[in-house]
Amino acid sequence: MPTYLPLVSAYIQYLSLVKFVSLYGMSFKEKVNRRTADLGRLIVECQTQALQYGSCVSLKENITKHACEKEFQALKACIKQVVR
Image 1 (tube, one colour):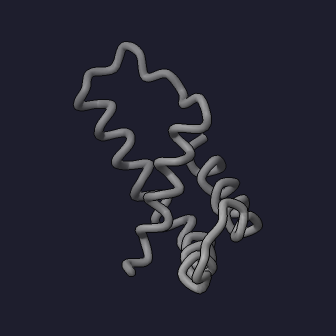
Image 2 (cartoon, rainbow, N blue to C red; image 1 turned 45 degrees about the vertical axis):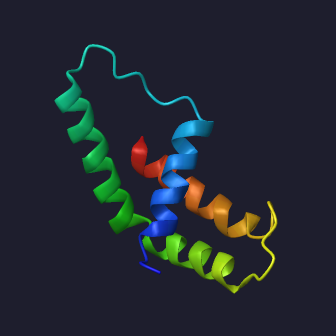
């Protein structure tokens, strides 16, 4: 499994769970460029947390909703810090 997949998955969850900063007034291209830049920073700055979360998930045979809660919360905190 590529190391960035847990990070992308967590980023998508974060965007759907938390109200994202409004990008009203920006063109579509500007919005895409900003989000792409954010994703690049996330991959670099949150790599350790993403690896820990991905390892935890991949080791579980019967994954449950809160099985890797500690790792997920660490990844989520890193994502919030980078996106701000």
